[in-house]
Amino acid sequence: MGLEIAYEDGQTPLSEEEKEGLLLKMITTHADLDEHEQLNIEKAVEGTIKTKFRKEQILTEKFIKVLHKKMFGNVWSWAGEFRRSERNLGVKWILIATELKALHDDTNFWIDKNIYPKGEIAIRFKHRLVNIHCFSNGNGRHSRMMADIIMESIFFENPFSWSQSKMNRPDQTRKNYINALKEADRGNIRDLLDFARS
Image 1 (cartoon, rainbow, N blue to C red):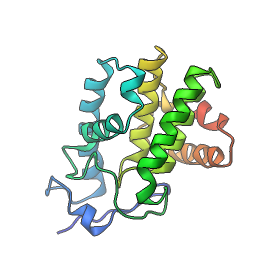
Image 2 (tube, rainbow, N blue to C red; image 1 turned 90 degrees about the vertical axis):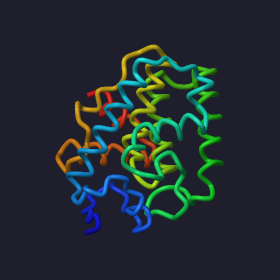
Image 3 (cartoon, rainbow, N blue to C red; image 1 turned 60 degrees about the horizontal axis):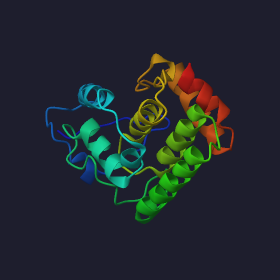
Image 4 (tube, helix red, strand yellow; image 1 turned 30 degrees about the vertical axis):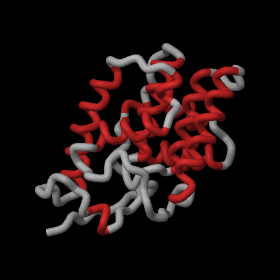
């Protein structure tokens, strides 16, 4: 029996080929998937939080891929690999590497020239990263962890609280997050920054 996933607002559906990349065949429901992904993510957080990275390490394609692999590598065979198909969100898959390089260059500039406050830099990075939509799944969680790593390793400040939520349930907190993302899409980053800090 194949995995049947009911997608909530803001989630990207997986193709049948991507579903076949599921490493744990006993997963048959979205709840099972969430549970196994969360266990993998918690291991990645443990290993990442204890490590301090340099800016030159973090703002690279390699780091983006390795972190995704750490977060989802025990669940998906394609974890850490850029998607190779079009999505309802994100840039054309062929432009992922180019857009990511532009994001890294812009972020280095923002940091070096103090263009924005520290927290805003991390959130602007997160927002652009999730809009590039590098991977078939896990982009929101990955981009939030990247923002936290930027706060800790580049700015030496506490990570964001993200309303103390994993945002894997279609509750009011997730709705608030999605609404804040939509506001950021319109150029208002403040709601997303406030949400990250709440």
